[in-house]
Image 1 (cartoon, one colour):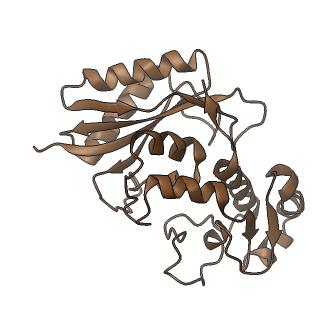
Image 2 (image 1 turned 90 degrees about the vertical axis):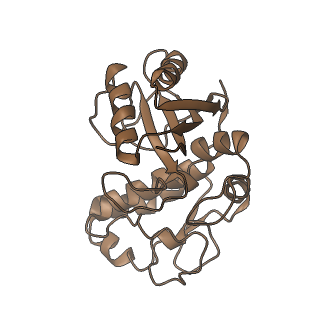
Image 3 (image 1 turned 135 degrees about the vertical axis):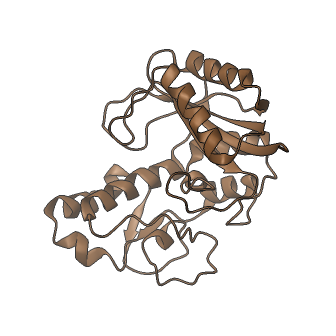
Amino acid sequence: MPEHQSLIALGANLGDASATLQLALEHLEADPQISVCQVSSFISNTPVGGPVGQPLFVNAVAEIQTRLAPKTLLAAVQRIEKSLGRIRSETWAARSLDLDILSYDKIISVDPLLILPHPRMSVRRFVMDPLAQILPEWQHPQLQWSASRLVSHLATAPRAICFMPTIAEIGVIPAALDLFKRFSELAPGWEVTRQNTNAMFEVYFSKDLADGSPWRLPRFYPTADDPETLVKQAIATCRGMTELVFAV
């Protein structure tokens, strides 16, 4: 089987996170069907979602070549997670190790077992900063933007979010409405607008916007069926877009 390029995101915020990421890289390299080509610097950032009070995360991105098919690669990285103590519990909770397949060649897949490219990678500084460090010209298969252009956009785009047409659904759930009113407090630097803007994030919540928008990611719309979760996801994602990261 020919070799394929894949990008793997590594993260941890329990125990000696840097040591765990290094062990994970060694496990990847030990697989005869995987070769680790290059690895970014280890960076650190505050958690952008999930329970409060978590330790800082340590993150990195690795480029690999593999002869494994996508789902077989997924099984391989999940075995590494388990062998290094990963226990899956609450979404975005603290974890000993998180390995995410960001991309596999230029495949675009909506398979719920493995969505490719990773549906939130382009709106996470802790993914895009290290990726741009090692592969600045890598092209996102859907957006057709380079990694360096995506990083620049995260740093410079207007920080406003439009929740239309979901405001009505939010308003009937007290907990969701409270989060909505506190949005700028919980996602510092962001403002909420009721008008369509050129902001980087509005397309997630305005399905009627033009398909040509470079920030339209069709597979990742938080559902209006659960307005509280929708607002929580929006807060976490906005923070992930703008939280500064720093070298370990």
